[in-house]
Length: 331
Image 1 (spheres, one colour):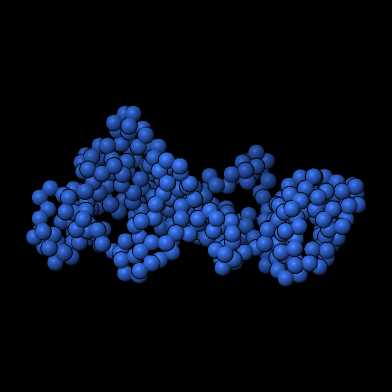
Image 2 (cartoon, rainbow, N blue to C red; image 1 turned 120 degrees about the vertical axis):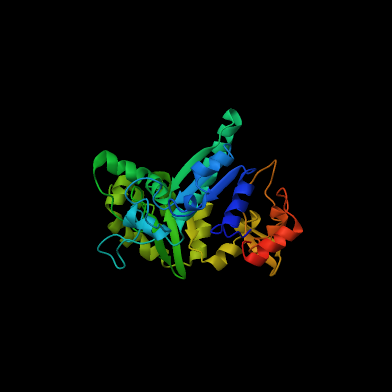
């Protein structure tokens, strides 16, 4: 739908729709919708059962509440960039933004979860509520054990690149035709890796016998295993190591992702028909549900595609009034 709620007639249309709605989600700067009679305190007078979710960069309170916020800004101010990237002293070192807007995506997921929880609460009490969701809050929460470790120890974590800070070998290694990722999560997997690369002697070496020792002597271990891994193609190592139960993967570009047999077996791409573009591909939801599986019968709509269908259900909305609203630019 498209409604110009900066006009009084448009704001009234939105209020009429909200009167019978379950959920309103908005992503404007703090205080914006209040100017148009669409803030939570105004809306709950119209519909006290509404679940109203406001998504902003910094939340409705605090000294930054009026700032604009974008994913990259949150990755910077919330610490994610400080723990992402190559370790200091190596080529390309420095804070790094994640390649996709992960905080935006995570905020959407938290928003959906909060709305569902609020609806369950409304089922029990009959009352709606307001949800104040901030990208910065999501980012700080997502620091997880990095944040908790800092709070407990006072030690600021440092970037470690692609390596796992608590186990080794881990991270990116070069094969003869490209890169692979290894993640040796325990001593048993290290023994299996060494057997495959023909170095059964390494697990008996005190420098490499346990994960803490391998992390401590990672540079020395690299000098031994990297030339061996570089001697064969990536497909060989992935096949051979996976056969032994050693976690290993090629680093796929997106072409390889969508050609991957597991991605295709899981149905991660669907096709549907778009009003203007014909058949189009879509990324599917990761939720696989047995009783109400997700369908992909409706394509992403064009702007205003459902104006008539939705507004036509409002009391007193005639074809003539719809035509007037369109002619005036309200919808």
